[in-house]
Length: 297
Image (cartoon, rainbow, N blue to C red):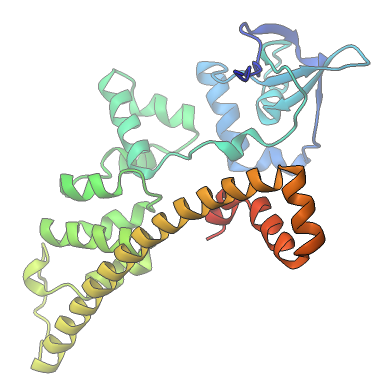
């Protein structure tokens, strides 16, 4: 039997009066002073509303329940907008929609800004829309200058702070690639770790050697040992990731089998009455949320 997937939203947007929308959470006065709200307000003022608020019809009273878009509605009210096009949800689930989206990485943000500039949008216009100063826009646009394509590819979907790229820029291309690989293996993308990698970089792998370091045989030996240990650790982490992935597949398959067993009333009754502890363990495994456990790592 084919399961019918219920449509979550109506196909067409509906224009509603802003006053008809009833918020599902209270927004403090302090929110008006936060950077996020300032960006939303500036964006709507410059280019209009991009993402429609999500609402659901109230079951008892007239009006609509605002499920997502509280800051957008607050900004529209401040700008004097009285009507807004809304996406109509078929239920009134009030979970946070933003929990299920992927944030832009610094590299993705850079590429969007570059594409916008190439399309004819001025840096000044971008600064107004994003509520950022012109210097910040230029820094984002020039983020990858001096970074080799291979390192960019390794970090393109990672949450890497912008200062990290300034550190990588001081390394030659082969060392940038090596540093990006180490960051991925360790799952560490903070500036302190990048600086530690820079400090461990041999002088001949730096773009600007600056003042020559006093590299005694002991220092060179320590650097070589640290490099070997980092590579060995990276290989070990890679091996553990493979084992973890295989174990997760096995656990998921086993969980599905246990669910089918416990779903059989006769089997469940037999285990519950004659093998209570085993039944409890099986039930615990069947109820585990492996996706949530993975996100808690």
